[in-house]
Length: 327
Ligand code: ADP
Image (cartoon, rainbow, N blue to C red; front, side, top):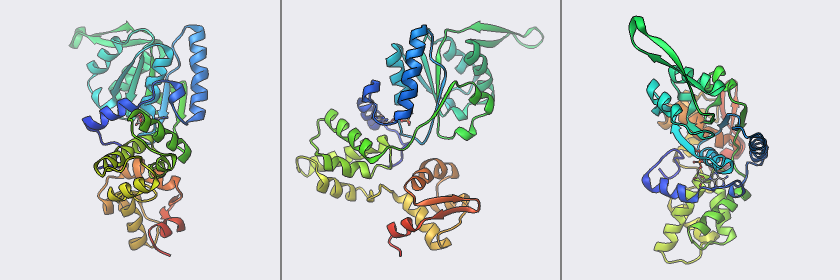
């Protein structure tokens, strides 16, 4: 699915790696985050210490992994990337921790999914750079404390509310990433087009940006689809009209809503007169799970003012009725 921000394939992975900004200066938008981190980096470097552990949260595709890699580059170190589901066994996380080089950055994606055991191994690692391991079995079992190299943990999550508080409390910096403004996404599209050597004018970039749901990963994907279309039809430079045509072919609506977004809205309008509707009902009507609706679809629909959360359930707004072609 073109719009699934969580979908991965070799092709998109390679595309993403090539387009990832490498330094602070190329990371567009998220001004507050950059300001905070620039200070944290300078201070840490000045003291010759590692930076405080950092928790980044927000919807997928907004630049959390990218920021971890940039931090490593700016600190002059490397970054090990992993995700909570691959740290299930204690030896996975212990192995990873002891392999860290001094000052290295450890990025753990989906950190809210760590097992209890993994979390408990992480606490002393984060606090005192040591890890407790069990030696021997049964009666003679003892624990030993192994020293680790100082490191910075960068945790990423789409659901900060699902983190346990002992884990959350061990991050010195907690920051939320916001959806990008259309102008910022336009800059991202122009930058990516340049890297892909794809001719595009500003209006063409704006058109793609406007349909990218505030998300750089989606902007890059849509750019790639428009590039294919333009190449196959031999149209030359991408302008607004070409971008518009191409995105229509790929079923991306003018606000960037995909089939599921539209289904969410139409279920609420047609079956529930606009709400309030419970999240479970919306999920089952669209065939998505509750978590995906909450983390991927709903945040953007709320951001553009198409959906509201009320104590009695979700409601669609007049703007959404209008967008869906109702009065
Ligand atoms: P997340 O980890 O939040 O899911 P990523 O860091 O993997 O998101 O970002 C997805 C893609 O979007 C990256 O490959 C990068 O090309 C692009 N991207 C993300 N943030 C920015 C940004 N601030 N400026 C330019 N491109 C960005």
